[in-house]
Amino acid sequence: MGPIYLFDVASSQAQWLSLRQATISSNVANANTPGYQAKDIESFSKLLDGKLIPVAVTSPMHIASGTAANPGETREKDSWDIVHSGNSVSLEQEMLKAGDVNRDYSLNTAIVKSFQRMFMSSTKG
Image (cartoon, rainbow, N blue to C red; front, side, top):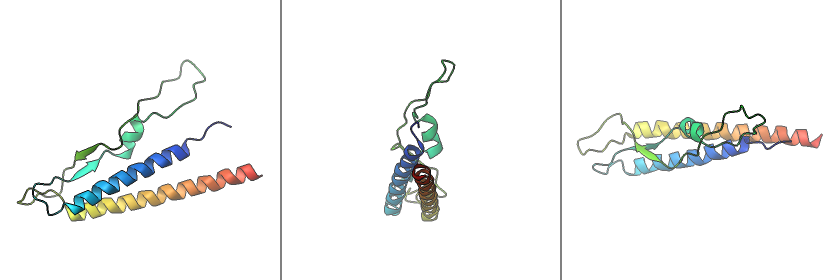
């Protein structure tokens, strides 16, 4: 049986979710800091598009895989509103993003648990 990369992808997404949650919490912590610009990290789909995922090459006609991406790269995000002090953090927007992180983490965990149960049942019998 060949290697299974689902766990690698799930682990990468968990690391990405951790980085995104840290960025969100940093934005919330600086909500009253004058001139602070809200930040966010690149989407996981962009990270996954550029990530090197090993592929078994069984024919010389196969396409080569891409290069690795930096999951820690942050970028300034357009905010809903900018206050007089120049701060662009919207607490409502940050809470929505935190809810998205929670939902994605729960889904990631459920998929890994299901796959692990399926994998264990196939090896037992």
